Length: 250
Image (cartoon, rainbow, N blue to C red; front, top):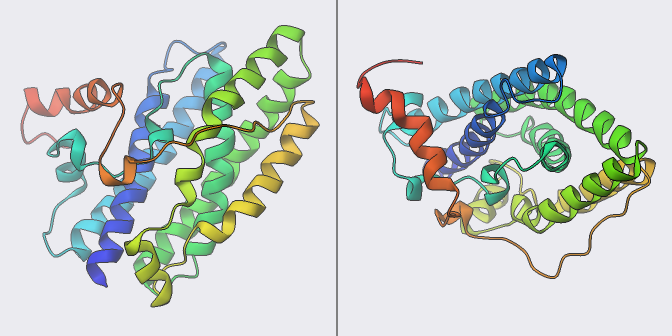
């Protein structure tokens, strides 16, 4: 069971690390200086979650791997993040749509995980839930602002939602690892959270005058290391400094 908990921690850590890295790509490119700082701060929070979760994973799996080992010494096939986290940023509305769906999921799941039987995992989750709440507020505000802005901003926000929606289901997937942890009472499954998540996201989307998408397909495979074509360059960028200066620390 400890190995399963380690895998769960590394998956969540990978989600946070990869999404944080994606958001870092907005630095100096955001629509305003204030938004540049906001996205940078969200990225820093996510990387902080990743550090705690990946360090925990290395302790639980008995390898003693550090956060740096997980971030810089693995191939792209060894990352277990969801495909949503690695999606290219797109335009600003696509990024906000991704932040909307992810932050609502993160709040719900980390709040559930804060009651986990494993004290170390529960402690990390409790902290992450609080910070994800701030990220959710940022995404909610921008979703409504863009939806009620101009015809062009509304069109782009709806297009962003349509683009990211097929990737959301993977956040709530159950596999054998998740089922074993849930049945043992070690960590809850995210699957029961899908309905309340959709309800909460739907409320924000409704306030923005937009519609929830009805996708005809769904993404999967990220948790098993099957990533998109865009993921390799992202990992190469993430690991480039460490490969030039082996042994450096964050």
